[in-house]
Amino acid sequence: MKIINAGKISAAVAQLCLKANYSLRSDVLAKIKSAYKNEADRKAKAALKAIVDNAEIARRDKLAICQDTGLPIVFAEIGQDVRIKGDLRKAIDKGIVKGYKQGSFRESIVCNPLKRDKSSHQGAVIHTEIVKGDKIKITVMPKGFGCENKSILKMFLPTAGIDEIKDFVIETVRNVGPDACPPYVVGVGIGGGADLACLMSKKALLRRITIYGLRITDYVSKIESDLLDDINKLKIGPMGLGGKATALAVNIETYPTHIAGLPVAVNLSCHALRSATKIL
Image 1: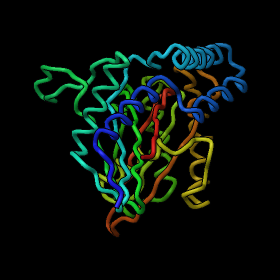
Image 2: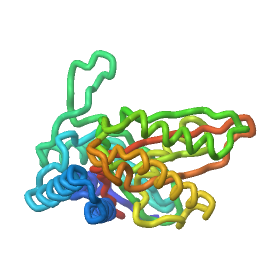
Image 3: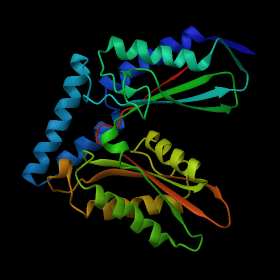
């Protein structure tokens, strides 16, 4: 049995908060640079260059990529052979507060969602999963709410075909238009119950967007590719200025579901798709 002190978790979370907010993920940055290289529209190309320049300045000068440093979403995969010495939730909250204060990041969390009378850094959303092994894998995703507010869930009839699901995803992006800072990464969760579909759509954003088909079937990978092509035909483009790149990727996660239902959730990320991971 491996023992991991809660203080070590706090320190790791604090470091991840800084890394995620300062350094755009390498796979995302590579896709944006590729979109810039392939873009012919003058306005769209200028927008992509500004996004790349912003990411490089943020990393170099240790500044937040975006002023909305998000609601911290924390995914913790905990090995079944690990014992945590201390309180996991308190350890994560402590790390979030430390990291966000150290980075001088905005207090974006209201303690009471109804009264909305006090903001702070506390209130991270934490998802835990028990896995094999004696390690803890921690991922911090600062999720901005310009894109989070565009999340959507639809409970399809079980008779719905794949074309109906595709139309739903495409129409979701069409309706969002430029409002959530494209080019987007589109996370889709299909199956489970309503809660799991929503969680899968967000976890889909953690998958490297330069890699397809590693944890899903070729059938689903083909749907991802088709959706990406169709979404980019909308020509919303970077920051809504037109051009080729409305989306950088479509990532789909699936899970078994009930014979009477077919939940489908869509979770968008803006071009500043931020996450950082550490294994303890």
